[in-house]
Length: 341
Image 1: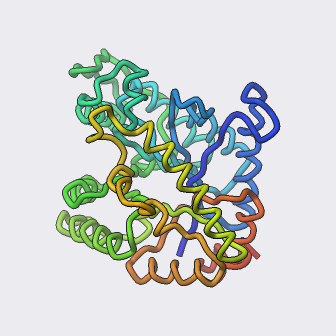
Image 2: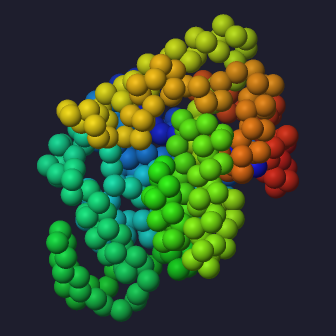
């Protein structure tokens, strides 16, 4: 198995306010250590207007991380295309890809938080159309060195050549989140890599991977298990009481996300809403427990066809190190094991 991180930064830290930016520097140090321990990648979110000091300038933060790392893949999970000028985004992402030596994994999405669409003054029901048009422009910008024009519903560009080109060819891998069969098949047919959510059971994940694999093969595309990654929350507990206490904290954190995701009609928003009405549903598949309990859960995921996991690790660098020392070697591929030793 391959292990990466699904983590983010906040400008503030436990002792200093957001104006210091210390939390961003802590994030950089944390990921530098992750690379040394053998983690394969780190994916970071893009969010706005929460009041939690979350990452809003994702590509800038990852560029800073690129300057301090050599092998760590740098992922976005995700850049929300409806909010961005697609030409500027193509330029910025390509610059990061060049600076990092071709380590960008470009996760893209339509957005889901109701408060963010309101804040940007963008209608949420335009998200899909904006996403498709922006993606068309970005891919064209990366795939051609010739000047072109684009006249669409939301964007107009005349006689432009977008620079610089990215380091990876034909362009950085495109990752998208999908959950229902139709969206998974559509992602596969378009050649996208797949981000699967952190709440689904191993059985459900196995079904989704099978749909993705079959859809790729039906289009004549090869399938590699590393084209699919699954997010999972992780906490290595000392005992049952420690595990239960940590799960209570995680449930409170997830509720905060649910609250900003839900639209006033309570029918639209994040994929997390599909789990929100059942008590404990957002925690029941989290990798919370002792070393042996987590190993058993990883074996179940592996049996379902999961080979690449992005970990959201609670507990800071000590937990990061402990997973690399006590759990990763039993599951990781040989190069990762050597890096972690």
